[in-house]
Length: 180
Image (cartoon, rainbow, N blue to C red; front, side, top):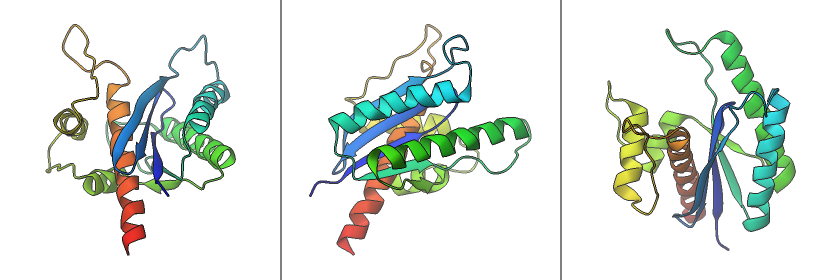
């Protein structure tokens, strides 16, 4: 039986999603929920993400789901307690939607563990987002990366790349478990 892994990088602004079948990326995308007029509440965002996940459920027989674990601690200059709380709530909502929709309990994986499992090398002081983008560019030339006029990756690109790493890590974990 083929292993089809869904990897998600969940955020209240943009969620990245990647489907991998036996080590090969078969779909990667992102879902933008930043429009305050369209998505007034966290539940509006969750409803939109649910419809996107329903499309994936229709198109693919997902057999494992891996989700980037949300942050649990403060770092100076980063997210506030309110932001971390909202992100954790949204992560929980989307995780439950996955369980309900696919009948699969999602596995949480820390970003550092996922990058290591996927083969992304990051040294102390490196910008992890830039390294993940470069990893995707180097290893998956079929994936189209779009840039702004200023030469920066367009919004959603880095979330999509993070979901690729989560999906690759999940796929590796499942395949290692099958061989042992």
